[in-house]
Length: 119
Length: 110
Image 1 (cartoon, rainbow over the protein chains, first blue to last red):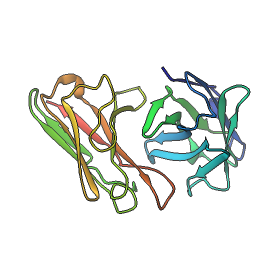
Image 2: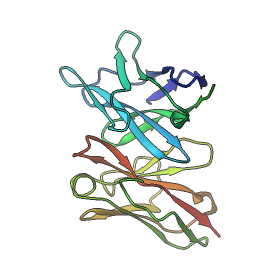
Image 3: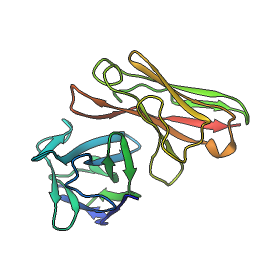
Image 4: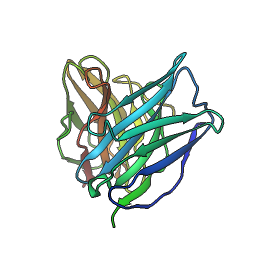
C-alpha cells in the first residue's frame, strides 16, 4: 500500500520560499510507472495542480503555467522522497498542499498540510 | 475559473439516483478520460472513478462513471447519507501538460 507523508512547515513569510517534502513508502520515486505531483487547495482557487516529476530513463518535470518560474519539484532517490519549492510567496499561496502519486490517475494522496503565508 | 465545469451543487433523498456532470474540452476529457474524486469534510480527495468508468477496489458499485465526447458524468445510485460530500472531476490536459480540475459539486443528501 502506497503511503505519502509530508513535512509540516506551517507559516511562511511573504517573499520567502515555501519548502515541503513528501516521503514515499510502498513505492519508489524512481518508478517507471508513476509520477509524483504537488496539488494545492484553497477556497478561492479550488484544486490546483502545481507540478510533477517522474522517471522514464531520465528525470522529467512539468509545471503549471500559474507558478512556472517560481516552482521546483525535485526527486531525492536516496531518501525516496520528493520536494516542492515555491519562491516569492504571497498571501495568495496560502492553501492546503497535497503530495499525490499518479499511477495513471491521481490515486494516492497524503493528508495535506496547511501552509499560511503571512507576516 | 476552473478548466472543467461542474454544477456547484446537487441534492437527492436517500435511495435516489443522482448525476453530476463535468464539461471539458478536446485537450482534456475529449482526449483523455475523466476521473472523479470524493472529498469528505477535513479529508483528502479519494479516487472514485478513473478511465471514465473504472472503480478502484473498495469503491461501491453504486458509483459509476460515463463519458461522451468532451463531457463526463458521475452517477450515484441508492444514495446514502454518507455520500454527502464534495465531488470533483479531473483530467490530464494535453495542451496545458498538466492535470485540470472542476470547481467541485457539493452533494447534499436531504
